[in-house]
Length: 188
Image (cartoon, rainbow, N blue to C red; front, side, top):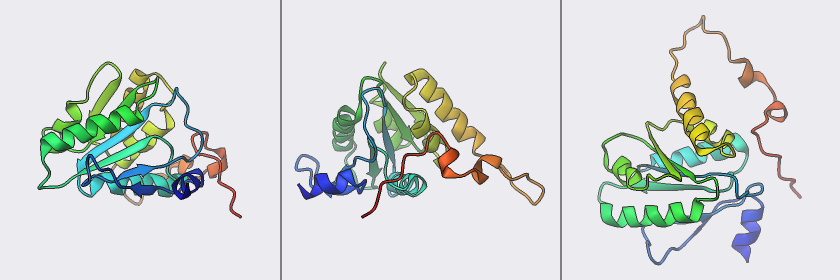
């Protein structure tokens, strides 16, 4: 009961997963989860996946629904991690499918992620924060569009900056004017 109340407030609550005790599962509901909203699973070297989740929580003022993470530790059993990843993608996937974001192509997290690829699950390597923000913003679009926009966000987010680089006008806009920002949760 307490976990459902915390989830309604947009607070991530870790719960014990007896099948995979080394991987905490987080119940989160920030805003409404829609059946046309693609799930997002981040699989990366520990603690990168959790760090990306924390960043997206900071940006949105709470963790958007249907986002899962798997931090792959150096001593993890890849077979066990793959089984857990399959259960997580099944939990997160909706009618629009799911997208899996992973860090380094060819590394263990990416190999685990690649095993999830299907017609309804797209896997992208090279995740960064701009890619994840794009994935959250475009998750109600068709899966092919979501993958394309996420890849574009990831590559466009890589810039060399110096004193003459113009400021991003979108970064100066208020959160209320940004269409992909969730409504604020009222505090009591």
